[in-house]
Length: 75
Length: 231
Image 1 (cartoon, rainbow over the protein chains, first blue to last red):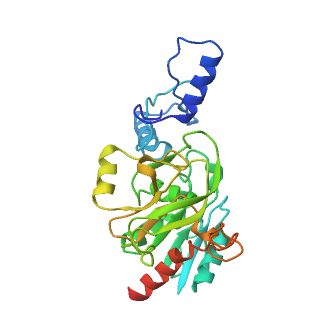
Image 2 (cartoon, rainbow over the protein chains, first blue to last red; image 1 turned 120 degrees about the vertical axis):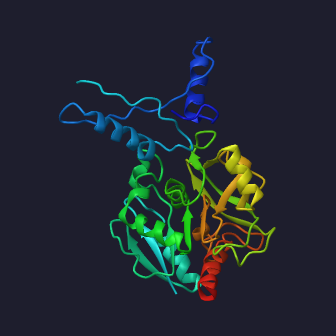
Image 3 (tube, helix red, strand yellow; image 1 turned 60 degrees about the vertical axis):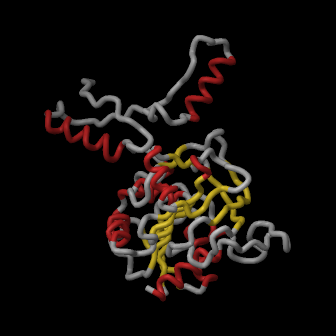
């Protein structure tokens, strides 16, 4: 997710469109991304830790984004 | 004097950068993203474009390219490196410069001749300017909003690392009107506007003298040629 204290132009544009279409109760929109890493077998704890590292170092940029969650989901 | 220009998949302005180097009196050398070698060049330009289609984040995938490992190492040893537009994005993603670049404040891609104030001339790429020079070079970006933490901004301003600041118009919502930065050592500079498109009369921005006669970008390339000779 984009950091709380930073401007999220995409979210702001969507918030304006929602307001125009009458959704007055929504005060702000923030847009992040979901990235799926697929493993052939259920990831081990070590692989989950490795995925967290990848999320922090490459998949996100700590200057502008925060990693919200890294978790295992079954198909 | 050899100056390398890296081509990534999706680079657009690599040939323009090579032309600017030639017009400034240097010898451009093509470098390839997948090579480890930078062919013994004296400086490197990371050109503009949309490397890897701007996937993930602008510059993020390019920052992982084999050639960048070598450039990051050599930059640490003092090799002059200039990042223009997407090249600037690659520099921040490589942590060679602090902060980040996000989508323009108003979501639009902006293309205009942009006035800049030169604020620091103690870098390999700005030594031919004088502090307070006002230059006009083209700007064209969709994700050029410079952001950084309060702490980083204070550091940049306190140590005078802002090299170029937007004048009259802040085109993309950049914090403190920051258009370009240098690192502490002064060998690495990144900026969003495009000096390589303002190097030859007849093909640059309009100037008070004549239409398309602006060549304010040339000094950036002349600066590095002189810095390399003096090094």
